[in-house]
Length: 214
Image (cartoon, rainbow, N blue to C red; front, side):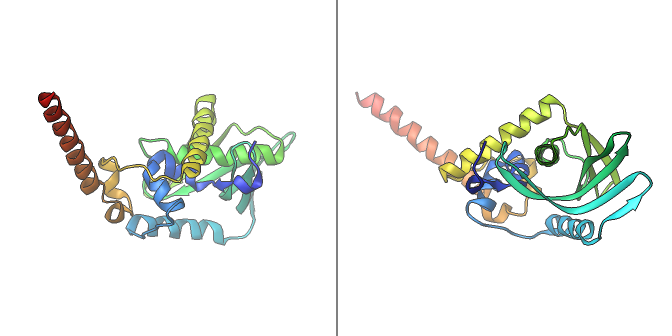
């Protein structure tokens, strides 16, 4: 269990699973840069958060729901929580809005699972599933909160806490996902990765020359 003073932003888990360096740049170094993708995502969240509580048959819909978990040491806000009516009352069903389409990585699923675990802790209940709504496909992706995903979420939270405690921004690892990151011009993964490779090459060459002299 984490103390309130040690809580981190719930959104940091999504950033960490996507890229630990991005997480550190945003949350440790307080660097942010808007691009087309982040602007679209922000507009989606604003639309989701702007409406008041609404109702439809068997479902109450609440928006901008405050969340916290001492187990994960996180706090944040859920875009939407649907309360589905069952025989024993209303049960929470978190829905997170994302731009684009479903990803190959689990960053979005981990963020949603963290929201569910917050609600479970706050409401003393069990949440079996939730959904991610993607703006590009205009469809929901149902997410089951199984033990594997819960373990990944707990590990991600622990990883973020360790990252923040160290205060050290990880080195870049250039890959396809970098092209969609709003921080690519600040992060400079290709430049820094090449510089790191060059440094390692010089160090290796120096060691080899030193060994020849012995």
